[in-house]
Structures are given as structure tokens and as C-alpha cells.
Image (cartoon, rainbow, N blue to C red):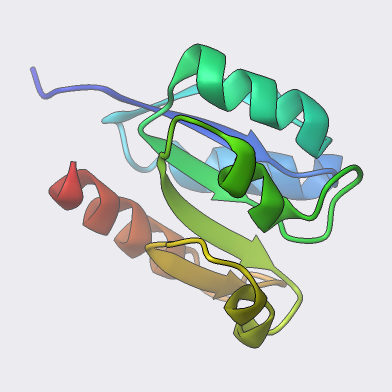
Length: 121
């Protein structure tokens, strides 16, 4: 049996959360441990649950998505998934494994980013 890795979704669009869950089901090594629809809850969950991987929306209620990582003690590998251009991330001192543009046109892009995270763990 292969190792299991935990991930957390920070996304405020319930329909997109469902899309992410369907895509992530293609990676059996990954186990969803929670969904946060606001960054205040997300910051608490990151430090409490310590996921290995984070799927992070940028524009979400509360803090800006990247600010969550700046204030969290635990630093999971992060995949930014947003309809905002990647340049937005340049305003933050946050490392991320991949940036995926919404709407998601290719599920394999996310699957490949997840496999990259698994290889980095």
C-alpha cells in the first residue's frame, strides 16, 4: 500500500470544490481532510491539521489567500488555483508548487501538480 498524504481545499465556490474533489479522486494517495470557504478558518486548520498539500484560491473571504500562508506556522506545499493571473502572487512572499488558472480546462494539469507535490514530500 502506498503512503497517504493529506490535503486541504481553501475555496469559496461550492461547485468548484466539487470539481476539485472529482479530480483529486484520480490521485488515490491524497486524502481530503477538510474544506475551508474563508481564510480565517483556513489559517486555523492549516496549523491544527498540518496537511502536506494545500489547494488555495487567491480571492476568498477574509484575508487574501496568500496571506494565510504568511501567518501560518505550518507551511504545506501549495497549489494556487485562481482566476487571477499568476502575477498576483508576486505581491506575496509565499512559495507555491504550481499556479493553475480557473476555469480549469485540463484536469491533468492539477493531477500533474499533485504528483509534483508527492515527489517533493
